[in-house]
Image: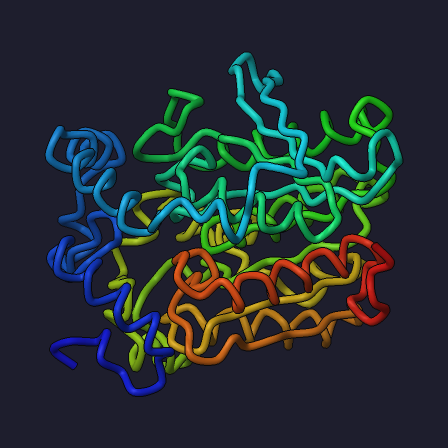
Length: 359
């Protein structure tokens, strides 16, 4: 399809936003993933240099502005939330965080959503306006939210340092442990992990790492959204990687080079969770996998859900119809965003999304 944003399945509001974004970004919002043979692909160092030019940084800023819309203080107001910035240390690197909680709960202990931003584990920041809006949207559903700027693999977030896998994952694990160690300080009684796209990858990988460390008692559930876990595109086993190619994302086999090509070649499930076996997943806490209908990543998320079920994990899946990749964060479908945020809140309160949160 020459103009993927015209796909008839898309919500009209998503069509309008995607048209604007496509026109402003030359039709592709992904990092440099051109279709070239693996043996000719740049090294990680070359990718870092290429994707940190002034021109590329300007393009990322433009995308951030387009996704941020009007800043959405109407949907996710600052009023009613206590917001605190801070840092923690991870492998001698200072990692920034933002912590939000509803003012109405004062010093009551409430659940906390440990949120990991998207960007293919390679780019973007939880400081982007549309992420701050999304984090506030979740917090307004009656939960605390703790988000971090882990080390990206290609272009720096506010942590200012880039490093390939497993640096970003290590930061996510260390941040989770820091949050748990300070549960009293933050007035929280349980933690769930969530994140979209690359953050969905890190949500799953952090959970699996906790299992390996015998630390799964630190979380009550995990909730990956549109997880980016395959690492190589397209793949005929996952039809959405073909039929939805170009709708917001244009991905191909270069994806794995941005984060961890050696880990991909070694089939490391901590880097690319599609490689996880049923045994890798056995014993994990309850999980909701949320995917978007018109997303190239849709089917890898559904396949991961099915593998969780085979592993005996209490798992559910939801498909947000009419939306592209991470459609809840586009800013012009507040009803859809709030519905997903409510679902995350339910899982934070109850760990399985069945009971209604008693707010």
